[in-house]
Length: 288
Image 1 (cartoon, rainbow, N blue to C red):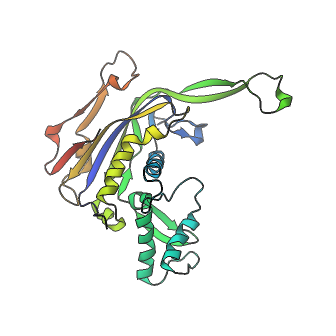
Image 2: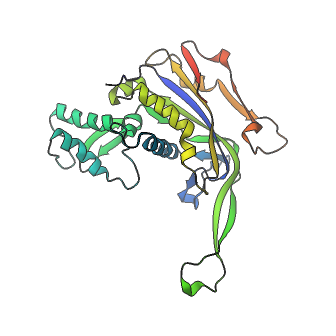
C-alpha cells in the first residue's frame, strides 16, 4: 500500500490567459467571472479541479486506483454500486450498512479506486449510499492580479444549418475574452485528512504534475492561450504544520513591472519570494 503523506503543504500557482475566457459565468451569459466590486477576474475552484481530473484521466488512462469519480456522463449511483459489488454487499436505499466495518469498507473502496475522491473528497449519500469523505486537497478561488476588462467579440459563420436558410445573411455569434490576465491560486493540503483517504506521496506528485500541465490538454478556441507559469509548494516539517497559512502566502508577492501600460504578457509581471520571511520549519519547493 502506498505511503500516505505525513506533512502539511500549502501551494501557490500563477497561471495566465491570453485572448480567452478562463472560466465563463453561466449567470452572466458566460462572460468571464468577475468580482463586481473590484473588477478583478475570478476562476472557481471547481473549474481548476475539472482540469486536474481531466489530466489525471489522460495520464493514468483510468488505471486501477486512478479512476475519476466526477466525469462527463458519469452515473454516480453506478459508480457506488462497484463498491457494493466488490464487497458482495446488497445496498439498502439511501443507507450505509448498519455494520460499521462494512460501512467503512465501502467508503474506503471509493477512496482507494478514485483519485479525485481521495484528493478532493466527495459527498456520496445518494440512492446507493457510500458515505462522505472530506478531501485533504482544497483550493481557493483564483483571482487576477489586476482588474480585467472582458471584451465581447462578434463572430460570423459562413455555413447555414438548413437549406432554406441558404440565401440569408451569415449567422452571427458572440464570444467573450480577456485580453490578458495573470491569476493567483492558493491551495491547502492536510496530512491528517490524507491519512483518512489514503492520499499518498505518489498522489501528491501527480497533483503537482497536473497543476503544471493541465492547460496543455484543455485547449479550445474559447479559452485562448492558458498556461501555468509559477508553482510554489510549502512543505511543513510536521503533520499539523509549523506556521499559519496566511503568513506563508504573504511571502510571495507579484506586481506589474510598469504602470505605464496594461499588462499583455507574463513578462509584464515580477513574482518575488521573500525567503527571509519563510517561517521556521517550512521548506519552499519551486516546482515551476
